[in-house]
Length: 514
Image 1: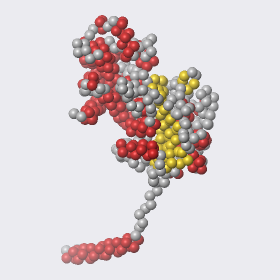
Image 2 (image 1 turned 45 degrees about the vertical axis):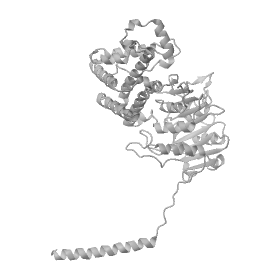
Image 3 (image 1 turned 120 degrees about the horizontal axis):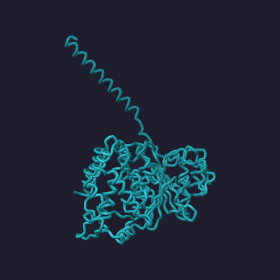
Image 4 (image 1 turned 60 degrees about the horizontal axis):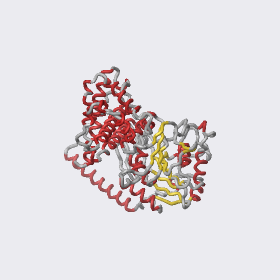
């Protein structure tokens, strides 16, 4: 079985688990139990593999907790960041799940123990809250302990049955693929609620390819959701000789459940050292150092579209002075996030890529003031228009805005990629060839008829800073000339044919006496 076939089979099984087990629990709420269980299995197998160190004589799951010395525990936490006793491993808990009358509380204790194992170690903040949204005592699982245990046992058993391949032969990506598959499908299943947290992988990859992170870069997503966009940016950096990517990832997320998902996602994709903070990026940015906003080589984000009540009341007195170009309107926070991202990028060579609704390109008022000032400062690098209905639960078309420090010219590059996509039942999708064309065109920065244009800041300011793509990329296609005489001749022919048919029909009816 090929890796693609294995991945597809795995995804089908995981979706079956979700549909079979969740019962009356809302899909978006239940995903946390499937994903949490998946993550629990991952870190258990990862930890056991570390302890065994390819020594076939050691079966960590079969050991007694009593053989674990303080020295073993201390060394493991310093290396892995956490500790799991043999009895706490996923395999051992899943094995006895059906007969464990205290399964829900046992799981809660295990998760608390894993998190607390890092207390006092450098990894404490990284591990804290990993299982925060995996509430095994929640009434969402059932009204009685028996109902909760039954549903939890089913999830554990079904996840235990999944074939992840040979863990030791780098099939670990299957965990990450399975994770993202569930997030994507629950997002689609839940409409806007899910779409708040998930950026389609094609858009994530496109942003990462255009921003082109380099080894040694610091990359940030200030509203990272489940961190899929941040991960794609990190994966754009090639692995070094040691198999490790020389890149530092940072993120912040307001929603507690999604913050926990983001931290899990980092572990699933091998970015154990990523720093993911919880909090409101606009009202209380957590990524600070030396009492200043941290600066990043790459800042990327898909902020919530036109967020209402984003924190405008405190913008005038913002201690970070992020809104010196103007305060965005109270009812639309798009430029609040953009302003934050601009101030957070490296002042010499920083790059920003952000997903925005089209209104950001041309709305007036305070937004127009901010937009014009960004253009006059020669920070705007380009605009890419995307097809409609790419995002889960959001049918409107979106665009990508790119900003850059240290530009060598005053050009603004526009691409209209809105007409090239694969139409889907629920969402449209960018194909590989669509993304390849966008990236190649962006890198060349040359005019392409009805697709791309390199404008100057003077050109843009001549339109009063309006970034509406049709102002710069003419997509008009002349209609084929109409031959009126030929059409008239065809009409005459059809009328004669119709008259003849009527005569024939009349004769036939007469013969029948009708």
